[in-house]
Amino acid sequence: MFDAAQVLAFIWVILVWSALAMAIRHWGLGLARRRVRCPETHARAEVRVVQVEPSFGAIRTGDVTACSLFGGGPVSCDKPCLARL
Image (cartoon, rainbow, N blue to C red; front, side):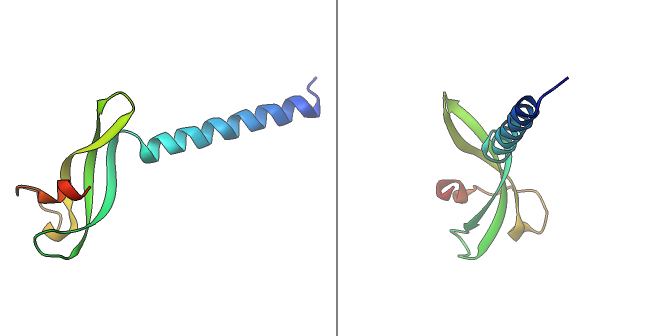
């Protein structure tokens, strides 16, 4: 029915598509986690950001939605940490 070369080619295609999907999920648009140094308190912080595509092929940080220094509360400051992302 199937020979070894066809099965190997099928497995190879599945692995390549899986790696591509994981890369897009990790580095693509949407929510992402970043570690930055807060410009106000100079403490290390983990932030959750929304990545947007302002032009074709460019991904930039659009907004900060969460910051570990706020203890899980809403981010309502001027967000100067956007300049560091």
